[in-house]
Image 1 (cartoon, rainbow, N blue to C red):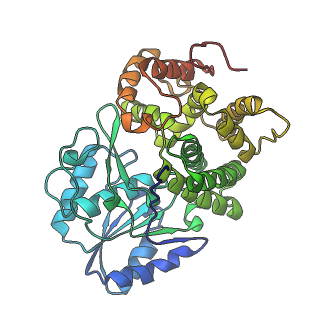
Image 2: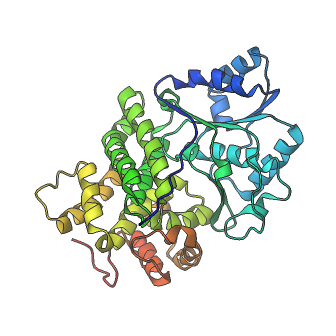
Image 3: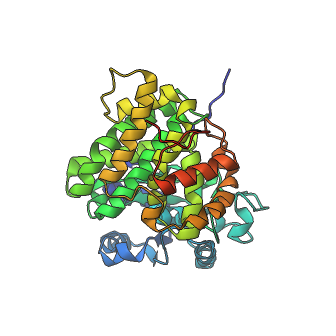
Length: 399
């Protein structure tokens, strides 16, 4: 019998206007000092002041920390953890995209631990987390990362990325309010949306998939693929924003429990070496990785194309799986994301170093339905550079 472990955030609120639940949840912790972690852009847009003011009016001492950047380097995490330790806070609230929430999780847990953040990294760390840390409430303002329902914090290193991962990093409360995503600009909406779609797709083909994650992943694919183009073209489309929020959240739960694989493994070096956003890194690689592994998961990719709305009911599973790759290419193109590495000005002479870093992502690669070795990873990067979908041992386009 196969045993599946399913982990969920203890408490979630999701839906238009759900931010109003924050005040009640904060009251439960009776904090003296609150650390509110966000980014300077959200503060400049005026999204944080109404929240902090209401908390202050309720008698809480609120410290707003905005030294948050996309794809945060290890040094940013180290600085925040030190700040949190010195501040003697009782509650951490993370508001923003994946970077703000990842850093909030990291700060809340490592505030009660000794040593550096580097000591707890997955690839090179030597210390283990021993304590749950401070309570944390996470509030996403984009529909993409799923960080509010996962137990990892991603940090950028010199040429790649690594994570701190433990169930102690799970949010105590997640509040997913689609209204907070309305002001997200088209390019960020596109990148984070394809990121969420990638979570769902990789969870569905993961070797660790199970019936529970399958249901979440397929519904997430339906919601995201049906809403993403609308959300990019008209950010004020309320139903599109609602569908994206639900889809992103469900994709996050699916991939947290089933795992992501090759797309993310190869995306990490792109972010580390060239500072591409995580969403764009996933988006540019998605069709090429899925095209390469297609033969190992034909039935599942056939299922995915139906969820994408590919209307391939008349096709065989083999033909439908190929149609799936075409639909993914089309979606990335339709939302305005470059569909080759050259489109991001990645030079050809970087493919070898990208491969060397990609091979190191063994935690992610282990979930791929097709084992991806060094030569496979190099072939995929080359395909993404050339703009040609290939399969193992075949440099010709998949047709």
